[in-house]
Image 1 (cartoon, rainbow, N blue to C red):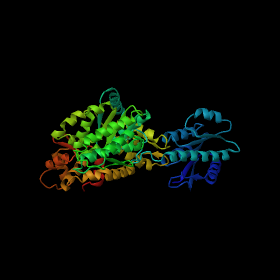
Image 2 (cartoon, helix red, strand yellow):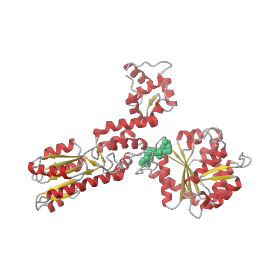
Image 3 (cartoon, rainbow, N blue to C red):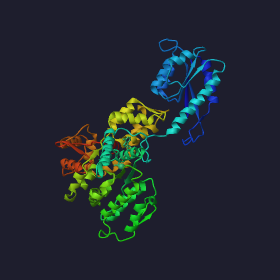
Image 4 (cartoon, helix red, strand yellow):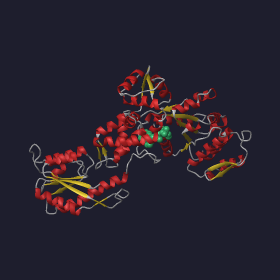
Length: 540
Ligand SMILES: Nc1ncnc2c1ncn2[C@@H]1O[C@H](COP(=O)(O)OP(=O)(O)OP(=O)(O)O)[C@@H](O)[C@H]1O
Ligand SMILES: [Mg+2]
């Protein structure tokens, strides 16, 4: 994309001089790492010889830099019409650099009048053109630097996102309380973080870990691996211990007591991996004894380095095929001997998985044991706004107010959806400004990404007939009954085969593709999913 400059000056001859000089002498260079790769990029210089024309151009076109002579007739005949242009530019895009040209002797007054948002002031004089060129070069470099420094701040899956952690004050406070109890009480503490897909469980764990580390406490996150049903519990315990060791900031051989224990238990350390070199059937080394002894020895190795050890198990959904491991964990944490250790264990997973894990009679007491919990919901509107605005603050890019409220409206504060949508909005900026004109394009791209990440899978949970019902629900404004769906199907001439719409609604609800909102009433709660169905799978 070329760099575009708008020059506003009512004297046509002076305007031509400024334009010509800028075009010839200012060379713009694309940021390193950008598609232009640090190479010269094209420069386009536009002129406007009247305030009204300048205002019109600012509103309808994208500019990276504004050069404006203050002294020209304003739209109501005032002398300093340039002020209007400056004000409009600052409203439309507060981060666009503005270079103001003032009459001879009036620079001090201009500086006083325009305190904020002006990149440079140039006084009309013999060397004004040279000063203008110099200033324009600096303004463009400044803008490039801002864009370069940041890149797109809404990029998922980088492992370090989000750029700005929003909201979750209550949740962090709760986690702090658990840690506090752990330090004071004479037993290990634990908690659950429950929440649906993409709601921010892993992000909350990372934030809590960072907080603890900043206070000099040791913390680790263990992303649990998927296990096959029938995997031996000893192997599951081993992989948990392995995960803990992998994320601690010391090599395993620094843990003298632990390594000695491993030796005696027939466990070989291979880099950060562990291997049983002995028969580990429960008779010889119970998974519980292994977990307990490893944690206790680890604590003895670490307690001179930290006040507490925070162990965060993420994606506990992966325990579904081996639910007994939770029992092992519970029993371990309840053993008298481990109570001296200041260990706080957190488990993060989806609500549904937790219900399944604790649904059998055998596991019922687990539900009581793991009672302390935070249930993550969406971010509030003001948290969404603050997160977006703060994320943008270093980038030189701004989202218009209607974009900010649209993002909240359509995502309902779901962090993952918010991030994907903002990513595409950012990519569609026009001269560092994201306005409503790019909304549809960015939304479509976000729906595409979300389709690939989750929605395609959800949609294909539905059978062909159920999919027709789902599509009709997506087209409705609010919750619908079987009768509403039937009427909509008739109106759209969609034939739905037996058994019945009621049955399909029940099945979709069992598959959790839709939710029951009242007696016989159903809806698709996720607006982005509704938009996805509407755009991809609409019935003719
Ligand atoms: N508090 C937050 N502030 C800003 N962005 C957030 C926040 N929480 C989550 N996000 C963003 O939302 C996305 C999803 O978050 P995260 O991966 O933590 O969700 P999750 O609940 O662990 O999802 P999954 O169920 O898929 O494991 C991330 O890319 C993250 O950047
Ligand atoms: Mg996660």
